[in-house]
Image 1 (cartoon, rainbow over the protein chains, first blue to last red):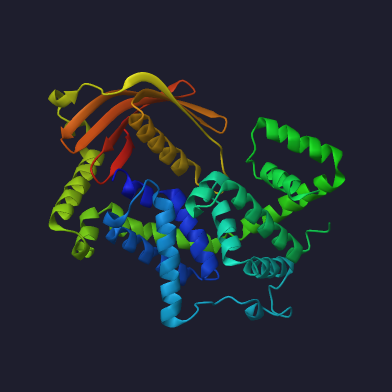
Image 2: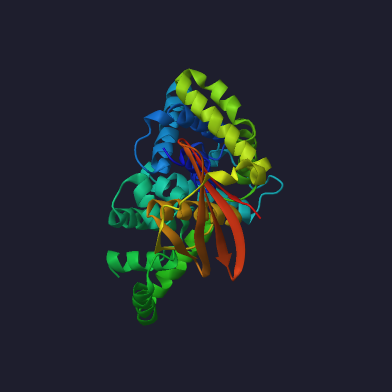
Length: 160
Length: 218
């Protein structure tokens, strides 16, 4: 299996894993780190089970399953919650924080599928995302548009 | 505007269209105020979403993952094999360790490592392998280019081409594979030169049973 390790340790796959891990753990660094490390180790352990040419979709599936296993074992690892954000009277509270809070809340309102596409879109082209998620490029475009429209609506960008 | 128009405009903002489709999108934007407004909204949304994947948290996470990979997969590849040896058969472990040892040696003693009397006839033909990749935001540029070159060389070898032209955004790379050294029956190293803006850079691309690697040898 040529290049398995090179693909597994590539910067682009790592970025995908970081984006997905961070959004699944609500931007908790410790949980994201734990999730990514477990994923790398599992991928190495199971590399003889890998079939096909593209390592990325396989590893992303491992990451998602590892996350689900973790949730089953210890319950949701949600840490950040819009309600936990500082109140307006807290020092340092400003428009940026408000915007961040709204943004995270609006991203949080997307479905898992929509969120995953948004995560991957930060790193990949449409074609690459289609391959990673094993969906048709046309379907991908429709889902991405739906996700962005939902986000824009939530943020108040969409005044159409 | 219908969904198709919106998808066209979203693809335009994301840089996913070819030249003809770009013109089509620009025509729509020029003729339709709603289209113009939608494009602006998409740009604002993209900027906002992009900001959520940056910042201190991501830098911190990246540093931690760096450290984890350095510790487990790069400096001491053999140690990761020990760590997960229960999952490997003894033969696979041996192959993996030997491969790791070789790649470690290549990095340090490259010039002395490959025996000169084991040069093999290059099993590639004169055809040109061409590839075009669009630049995407959010990727570390140097790492991306090296990965891209490595992938392209792997592909051109699979296609049996000794020459390749890689277009990455507005950058153009010419790749020439010029020699093949076989270290053993399971390990081949291809040597060659990459030209960018007329400047040559020598490389070696080695393929083993479980791994491959790309290094500059200048």
